[in-house]
Image (cartoon, rainbow, N blue to C red; front, side, top):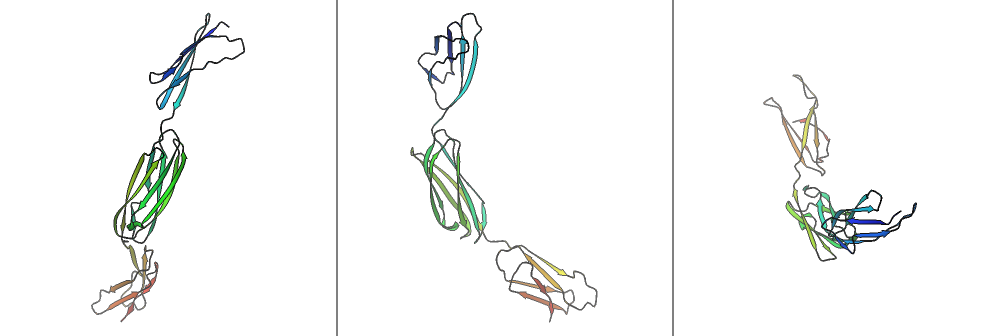
Length: 239
């Protein structure tokens, strides 16, 4: 085959080091040949085009996409509940992602205020590659009612820092209860026990006093139960 001329075309953002065209490539039938050309570019993705031409043949074109990695860039997030109940526990995920190109080492710090347990944890990142993510978990406890800000920060090996903040509110438990009577309908002249069924969503023992007053002016019933167990069956007693 006649001598080939290989020509490289690149986007304007890229710089070609050396010649962009190579001539005199002798390619025998069934054989292969190659030519080297160095390019440089800022971070990003680029399409390179190559033209092969020789006397007596139509030009042949090919292209390829190359990616140039950029510096590491960390992004951190705190994911978890925004509201927890007093004395209850919760878990928050600390998520770190390298949105840049080059791998990086970094030190992560998470500070939990005293109202949420008063914890400070430190984690190490080793060679977190571009596009990769690492996750850690931190436990919280609702110690003090109110809103509390927890802060996570990162410091990469190049000295750059990133922070993220999450506000968690601790609130007292709003007790939810349902009360039903069995039987729920009685006839005039009924004599016997009425079952009072109490159901609660509480996770803790509760002292409960429930008073039931009949429609009759001279009949009064009262019940007291100190166990507070969800689903307890209580009985009215006449006095």
